[in-house]
Length: 465
Image: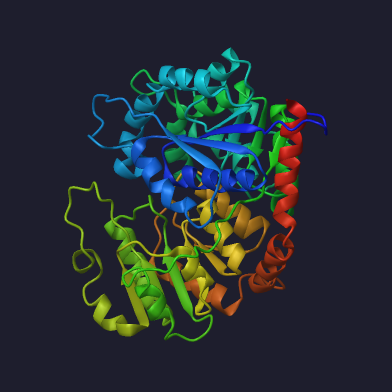
């Protein structure tokens, strides 16, 4: 687009129906809108209702549009996101999403944006966009180390993918530390398999890669230069980092209930508290909760543990029934186990928090770096094991909890990892505190740091029209 042109670029954003995906799409939408682009954000009615409050801090020029999710057999009424269904029902949610292909085409014909930015599940968005001559961009909300490990063309094969395949990095992978362990690979192998006549999760990824004009990735050169370059070489398409897109601290005042955790933290010494959270969609078993509870108790340290239960669970879950007997009375005011929504950004920004025991979700890792909080890593789901090895092994911003061969962990595993990070004794001559400080400064010390990534993306969008 020439310098004399006044055309305003119009981008349609279309994320997968999961909060961990919607959030990064919202953050990128904000940044693009702030740079003068017209942004249309597409999701289902219940999801757009949740997104709308995220756009109230400023007058973002973002249009929210909705497509009702079709009813499909097995999908509970009102379920519109992964938070609404158990893990084993995500396939049904994807079937419902696939039912939006025709309505999406009708919407696209009406909107005619310059670009469609889509997620992995709706791989068909690129094919639909091509009918109208609209370039599709695949937005990878995962980091480059994980994405290149999974999306290397050698993984896209007709033969059955095995557990052993997934424990071996792809050819010329730029790390010997990052790989799945057998207990993780046994879980991950399922995403390569078709189910109920539906294409596999990984085929959705591969088709998204094949159909897009280029890829944007939620990462940065400061953390993942060699992995971004490797991914670009492997897939043969441009990979444009847009930064990790952490949300800003909300400006609105918290309610009395929402600020309960912060008031508790106000009474604790600086950098003394271990904050524990596994995100909004990762739920521990009773055995895991017991080992974690006993481990936290054994550290002797103050802790704030946000322990969530799935609202769709038929089991009656309560703290008293699931925590070890006498745990709350023994830990007293030294620990707080909180089972409601908690303001994670404000918690990580609080001066009393010194360590974050996390499931290694990429959003949580990025938020920890933003506020300089050291990490103890306890990965649980598909990408998180690779995240933990990137963050703990390659970048040395924390320490991963040791596990047994079957993936279980004990009280001692938790206690040992937490105390090593607190005392900064993770590895000889390596200080997690100093590494975290260096990374935080390189990423967030310069107010214009993120601008360069967004400007590079916009420049590419301008020249591609």
